[in-house]
Length: 505
Image (cartoon, rainbow, N blue to C red; front, side):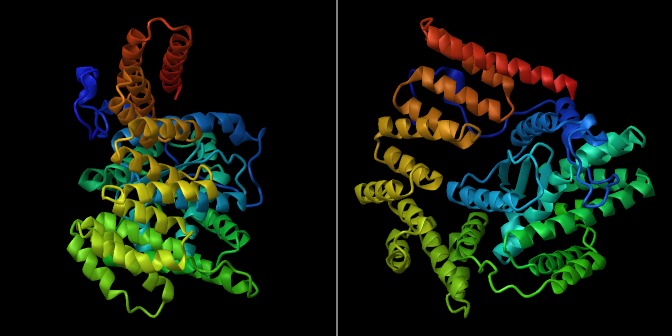
């Protein structure tokens, strides 16, 4: 953590960082093989959705998928970094749920992961895990294009391709399928030559029939995803334009396309099919308008992946003359953040001010103001502004986390801890919240709170050994309080149950 040494903190905790722990290769490979979403086996027509009681559901129930998905998510988090931007996460989460409400997905207990990786990638894992690389923002030029990828991934979930794969695997070459799944997820999570080589080697061994099934799954996901996009009121042409963009990327990349295009190969026929579907629909006057918010989030990501603020400043300055008002406004927003990243806070405030004046209630602008000024002499103004807008938007995730950061910057650690405890109750599956809460507990010398929050962080990160150790530390400090010991024993039992479930996968 980024904090001063705490004398009440055990030695093992003073070095707590967000770096994922090293895990055994056998466990990781087992999880990948057992839990990854396959793209290699047969599917039925879109209208023949699996229901509880059919062969696929009898093989893997929705509840089993949910448990497997959460176990897979812990494995993923132990190996990858996430983009910890509450504003960005909140935006994608709302877009995902908006699409899910217009999809054929039965189980909508979704978990979103935004991976800190500039490569083009998105994935869906049984149990409602949907992930996107930050790089998807770099490739998708509009919200509609971005949404088309999410809709496609939701279709993989709604059609329960994994359950069908398990059922079909009883009649096909399971070892080949498992090897392909493992190599695909290795490439998606760690990338590099090893993952690409693994895919190349295993793909050569997979039966032609399985490859045909893969194409069928992709076509079905295209059809269902397209309908989700239309149901959500979005531009039906967006899927075709995103496919065209991917196809161009695939051609330019040659033998080393992005991971997403390895597992979701784009062909001329898929582009043509998407374009044909859009052309067959009547023109709708009530389509959702292109989103300024998407362009703001896109520029946050662009800045995050640009290691040189001076370069980002030049890029955003060059876009200020763009004829598209949304692009121009987003460039001004990105420029303000780039100035702040370069340590030029006065320029950052001057650039942001016209935007705030024009839309004083836009949360993205308010959070940007807080990010620029939380460590300046304007901390009291930042706190007042955030509290005002939290009163208008109760429990808003981005505003709440911005206020917690502001309170910590003011060294009002008790208030920050109280707020983070509330957020942790609202978002118990968010490791970033638990990390910040452990940090706040450290500053307030709440040793038991440090250990309990750290345990939750490690559980979500898939490091059960560290989680158990933190719970043991908390137990030793509990003075045998009935309420505390009951809570600790329950969490230990949860960890043991998780370990037992892994043995079943």
